[in-house]
Length: 269
Image 1: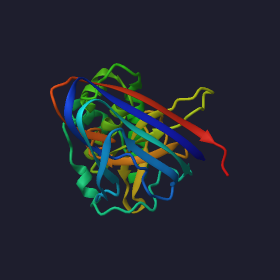
Image 2: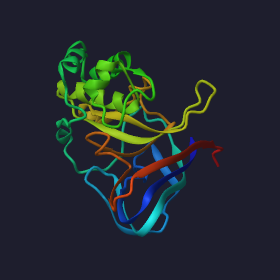
Image 3: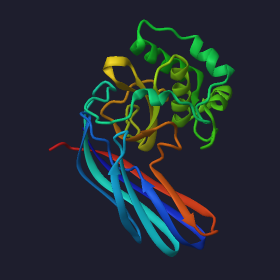
């Protein structure tokens, strides 16, 4: 599948800010499931700084904008070819030991509810267990936008019984950890039209390390493994750690954000 992605995020400030520094994890991952045809990142009024591939295999770019400035826009435009690898992250080069991803964060820390959910699941092997944990999270948390916030924890989302992809990912990470399986949060894009209507959005899912097979993706929000509709950007311990855009602003102005995103399927050449 060839996907064209247009993603524009505008940050506006009610008072001009002196400057800002951003760390962008907005370049698609390099592995067998996807190949970049072309990809451009720009920051209005910005100067590109250092860029590097971190230990987890993610490409990080630093940008600086000198003010005073009232609006900054991060724009992405590109095309990428994807193929279905049944969720397996094959060919992705990274130097981080998977055991690092047994660490819980404030967003993925288990409580009694998550412990009970995880304990209710058993599997024949690590892969089977991971699939069943994902299904359990899918059944326990109904997808419903607007009921949770960026700071909602996995425990809170489970207690509520509702949430979005971020909440499903955090809950699945917590449940995997309780079974001793390394798990991490993945950010990216999803193009889906299975019901005849396009659902183009930034998306999140979970990767669980299942022994010799390595990292395998599980999207509990959609009850499936990532396929050719998914574009992987990067990973981390949780949503905050894997955020595509992280930044520091010098100034006292209140910030508002506007996001425009389109993921379009193109005719392959």
